[in-house]
View 1 (cartoon, rainbow, N blue to C red):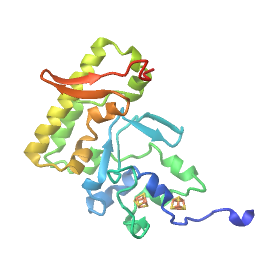
View 2 (cartoon, rainbow, N blue to C red):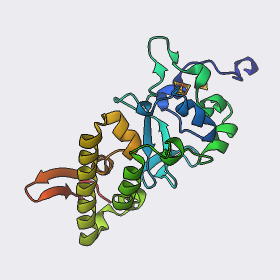
View 3 (tube, protein in one colour):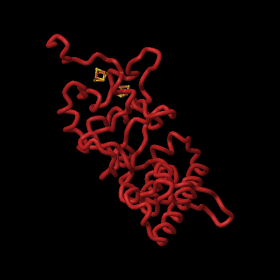
View 4 (cartoon, protein in one colour):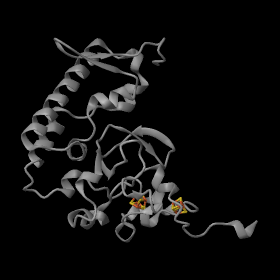
Length: 226
Ligand code: SF4
Ligand code: SF4
């Protein structure tokens, strides 16, 4: 049996297929030097749900993080090279990938929520989108989705109205910025994270557009709402 104990990376790609890494301070130069491009990044805003490797649970993130985005179909790292079955930026991979040892997770778990890079750490101060993302955070903050998911059936009418307004505000803000600055979808996902309506859809909340604006359709206890 002892001959089967793994103590080295087999470069099998399993961890890459499970998702791209969050970026840490040590990775700043990789982004600033374009080894990792903004279009390959996605922002997970404070309040969004994400798997926490330390607790093993899906929880609201306590501080913004920026990670390498998935392929669009799933969370498989955008730098995973399907043809060669390996990392497309191996010599310049982020710190979390360097320290990841699937056979000994102590080091990678020690990195969770530590020294995370945020959008404002990454962007130069004179980037014209910076004031816009600050404004977006001010008027369209991501709510605590863990709290909302846990109390869906008991949300007050006032809270539901506020959420509808927030979703509408978020969509209008994005639409305006995308139009004025010609952002591609991948860039939008880095600068502003995923739209709030998409995050709510993950909780079973449906969205529709009515003449009066955005309408949210909340799951009932019968639908599986809790
Ligand atoms: S760390 Fe483990 S899962 Fe990831 S590539 Fe290496 S052997 Fe595969
Ligand atoms: S950056 Fe490379 S090593 Fe890291 S998850 Fe992506 S493909 Fe894997």
